[in-house]
Image (cartoon, rainbow, N blue to C red):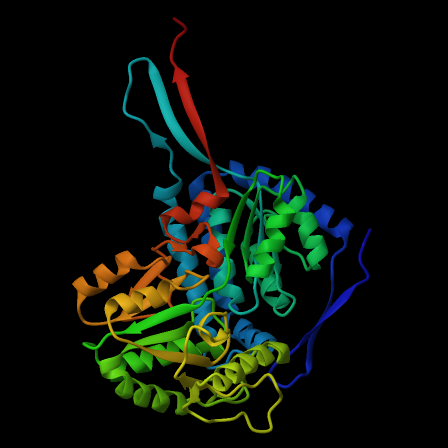
Length: 463
């Protein structure tokens, strides 16, 4: 059965219709999976060096369309056009890093010699990998799974959020131009219900999901009873701790950028800030100045560095958190408004006088509003940071490496930064704890979810 259902992408820049497309039905899904299984047999038999070369050609094809893809990104999800190319640059950097790491990470582990035996442990592909990518960083999040899955010898079926379908279409087109076997990397536009059917399909050997906690739970329910690899990159409520010994102006500039970049629509955005009470006034003054310097506007204009949120309903959640915080004693220090712009445009705000009784400090915000709270000691900062349902990243702002290492050992998060935030180093494992997810992408360990082990125990002669 094919589907007659259609979907529309409304550009957050001006509420215009940017794209109209058709959702796949069960027949299209079945055909795509059949092609993927067939393609994977051919692709998975290729030597690793051939797969690496193919993936590098794919990345080269993406590089050729960087400008067009950046324009599409701005139109689909509202990233300022001046900032959009950086996501494509990150896509290429991560992809090429994983291609470089593949040799060591995927090679056979040959055990020490033992008389009369050859023994080795191999990594073999799981088959077909279903990659479910979000709208907020549609290129950067997808590359974390697409490239290592391909390098490991799998076929990939890529489904992006309905807000950013052209990203998936671009990727599959670049794979074809690079000469990857037909069906090795395909895109498909699916409803939530059909996506659940895909997760349940026995031909899918692994799922990589990036999205909300609620979406992760839906994928988990669909995968129940199947013994397949499922990786989850979910929400975040990432914290920054500004110590009293740091350069306050520099810390404030970086923390505000980490909170406001992409209008705060990042799983690893800074969403709550703890500042040592000795330097709180200076930090607030600097943070407010940095926030007021942001230029909220049409993302297609060259001087805009803060665009709209992706949808009006997302903006309503951010405004509700701000209103609750103010009603419970918080103080809005910036005081800007979005003027006569559409409702998805949210003015950036820094809120002081916050507590953990406010959603602004506990629930995911995903917008350009951040709370700042005083703490009296490192111990209090650690307790506040760990008091969260999430655990993706935390950033520490201090010149004292030993202090940062001591604090890092106490923080229950996947990544601890010192003097930086909102960044992924592709040579480091990207992981979350609790409601921030499960599994690992990037680094030499980012192949784990897309491979299984096979042991070779070969006796040379029959005794």
